[in-house]
Structure formats: C-alpha cells, structure tokens
Amino acid sequence: MSTAKGMDLIMIVRTWHGIVPLEKAEGFRIYLQNTGIAEVKALSGNKGAYIYSQSQGEFEHFYMVSYWESIRSIHSFTGSNPHIAVTYPEDNKYCLISDPIVLHHEVQKVPSEFPLYL
Image (cartoon, rainbow, N blue to C red; front, side):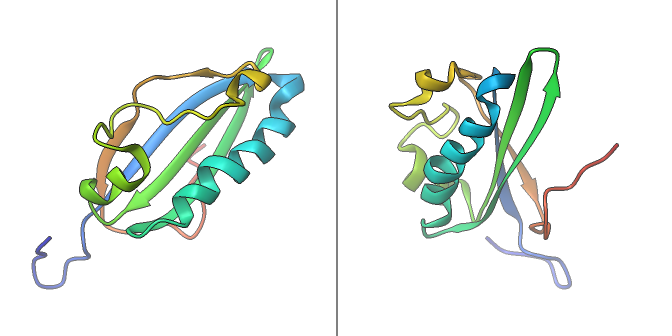
C-alpha cells in the first residue's frame, strides 16, 4: 500500500460480534482469548487484537477487533472469504450466538488499548 507523505500506513480493522449468556461470559472470554485472539496474533500481517465486552440484560456482548496490514493478510485467518465469521468447535459449549458477517474498515493506526467512547 502506498501512503502520502506524512500519512500513516492504512490498515484494515476487522470486527466480529457475538453474544453469550451472562453465566458463560467469563469462560467464553478465556476461550476467545485462547482461540481467536491467540490464533490471530500469531499470524503474519496481524498488528494487534482486542476483546471488548458489555453486559445487556441476560447476555454479554463480545467484540473481537483485530488489525491487519491488508485485506490479503486477513486471508491467513479466514480463508478466501474474509467477510464470514471464523468459528471454533467448542463455540456451542458457551451458547454463542455469532454474527455470521464481520465488518472491515480502514484505519491509520492500532490503538494501545481498545478505545471506549462513552
């Protein structure tokens, strides 16, 4: 990717969302850290990954946000269809309801922690 003089390199941020029942949230956080986050961070082209969660009623919403050099580098995690959520064999153990589609956006830098705008 080329950049204009004085501009940061453009990267891709990939955002996934899923929910689990509150009583499974802490276990799911550990599971997500050991599956999706660990796998993503080990791949070439990944620039960082974060988990953010928030309770709503009887559910915990989880957001996994990962930063990549390019859409092409995301393929090492997703295969040929980067817009479809990556799933794992034990997802059902946590009663996960996963959004099947993930979002991609261009960004100029990776934050030092997951940004919260309240």
